[in-house]
Length: 114
Image (cartoon, rainbow, N blue to C red):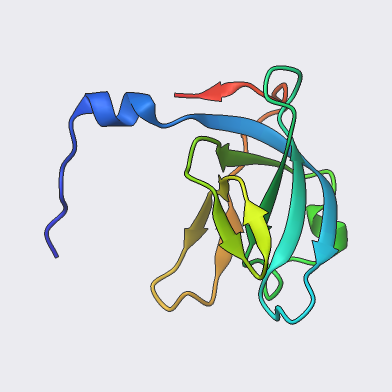
């Protein structure tokens, strides 16, 4: 597989931020998705994000967890809910192991990832 390269100017357009999961809800009829409310601090506020994490994380494990969110991804409707970003995670080849990306140490919510 050949990797497509992008110019640095494309990377600069991606807005990645540290967020904290404030709420985790089930979505009716969705066996993989949770509806997350992610707090991104004063500048951005809270965002609603749908994430396919049910098989990998419980609600209790997610609530309060700091994560990395792709903030300026175009919104997308999933199960009738507008998802306003994407949670970043590492996924193995079989896609049976998913681990959320998070700051190594405590970091203020809303902080930029560069």
